[in-house]
Every structure is written in C-alpha cells, then in structure tokens.
Image (tube, rainbow, N blue to C red; front, side):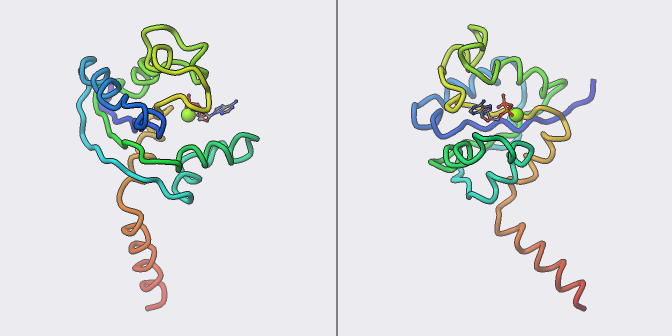
Length: 151
Ligand code: DAT
Ligand code: MG
C-alpha cells in the first residue's frame, strides 16, 4: 500500500491531563514515523475549517469551543496504511464504545472529551496537515493571489 500521512491531534483535554507522552508513545511503538509536531492554540476559524464536514451538527458550536479552549499538539505521522491504522489505535468516537487497548478506550469516557483526533482518509490527512502551515502564511498567500489578480 502507498505511504501516506495522517494528521493526529492531541486535543486540549489530552494536553491538560498530561497524556501527550502516552499518546505519542503509542504511535511510536507501533512503528509510524513522526514527520512534524507543534504545540498550537487553534483559532476559531481554523477549527471551523478543520471540522467543516460537521458544521450542520447540533454539537458543532460546543466542538469548536472545546478544540479552541487550550493548546493542542498537532502531528503528521507517516507510514504504510497509517490513516486506517491510526483510527484503530485511537478507537471509536464514543470512548465508552472504544475497545480497551485503544487510546480512547483506555484514557477517556466522554465523546466531547475524547483526547485525540485522527484523519479519516488519506485525502483528509493531506488537507488537515496542510492547515498547519501558519495562519499568517495562509493570509499572505491570499494577499499575493489578490495582488496577482489586480495586476
Ligand atoms: P472522530 O473524531 O472519531 O473522527 P467525528 O469525525 O464523527 O469523530 O466527530 C469529530 C468530533 O466531534 C468527535 O471526536 C467528537 C465530536 N462529536 C462527534 N459526535 C458527537 C456527538 N454525537 N456528540 C458530541 N460530540 C460529538
Ligand atoms: Mg472525524
């Protein structure tokens, strides 16, 4: 299978609860390659863009408040089949339904506090990792594009 990347994000509750090392070690022990990492306070507009597929859901405003409530750890992990494999390591969205041995199954109880995000497809992996260039850089690119149109 093709080498691909998954965007893995330790959510604010995972950072606040001191689970960063524990979560990273699960991906390291599995054998995936860490290609990028940063601690990041996600602005609201970027959180909304990241979760845009869910914007009609009733829980969307709470989800955005939660993701922007404190720093998150943003990571790009690489390897054969990493997207599907990371989803297995992470476990079901509702931690009470996640199998023991998975990150959510072992470390969380609430859907709205499920400690970690993992991309659901290779395309979304690319999209989500792509957001993690600095927001200022995105603004600059838009500005340059508009200058080009004007020129
Ligand atoms: P996942 O994070 O497993 O990919 P998702 O993409 O369906 O799940 O939803 C993104 C996040 O939104 C999820 O991690 C937690 C929150 N969420 C999903 N369903 C929810 C629900 N029914 N109530 C509250 N929060 C929910
Ligand atoms: Mg998802």
